[in-house]
Length: 131
Image (cartoon, rainbow, N blue to C red):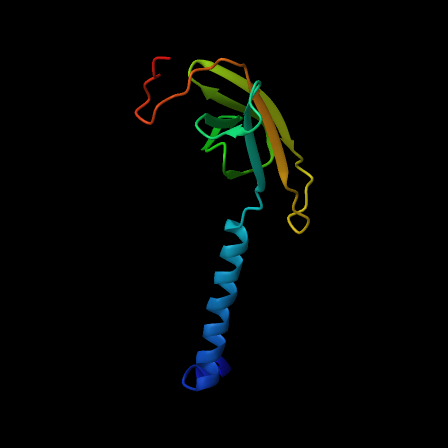
């Protein structure tokens, strides 16, 4: 009965608004993911600088994350196999994101993969140019 009396006042509206706000924050917390940033650098064994035209993918337990070797991606908990491929050659590494990591203590991961020498460069259209 007191709630009905408050419903007609601005206090009642404020209480209802506060309740909706708490539900919204709760939903945001449930949807929040604290995946950790991973930077992948792809090298050629005979080059002094990284290459940025490889295809890089990370896979873990049926999840697949594709990203550029010159950018970063965010990966969740698990053991990730990271593969860089460029014109028929590839290099693979792995990374473990600890299930006991704390979201308030994020970690930044770096992975460096080296492709074999003499790998032809892939053109933007996917064709391998003649040397």
